[in-house]
Image (cartoon, each protein chain N blue to C red):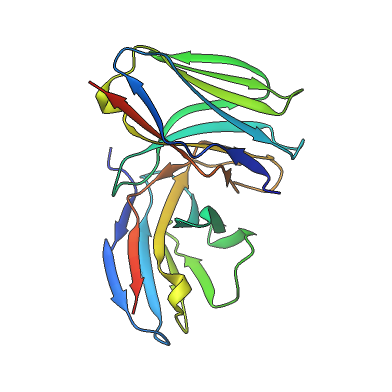
Length: 113
Length: 112
């Protein structure tokens, strides 16, 4: 069974640009969550989507947004990039229902110049 | 103060040692507790998943949860060099979907 797939693996952008990251969950999983990982703040929850609806949201500015498609694939978008947005962005999927274990992809490493 | 506290280490042990990794938390609403292992340049890999207090064993790994003390542990028996990684504790309250709150992660080095 294929795991969570995130594309691209690496991205380099400059300040002020926007970026879109993609996540394909494990087959049959309908919940997709996004996390930001940095050396200083660790892993922080961004948001969760279930059945194409945002079910939960972390404490990030509105520049961070996401969506989920009918096939459960998800994208997250970051607009007006700042240097502090440099991070590993991780996607996790879980089966139907709350509090099922989440399985992570290998992330997208975003570097802002 | 962070909701979840975890000693970042690094923790260095000889091969074959028993490793104890710990987290404390402040939010009494947490009910689901997880341990993840993360290798360099990879995403976190789920090791253990437990609900409420008690012990759970899986091979060389044992997870313990003590909700009265707000304290969780992961024990690794017969540690191997391949266990060298960052170990992350994570927990959720259960009533707000799948939001996980993570500890900072402990870097473990097992020397051969």
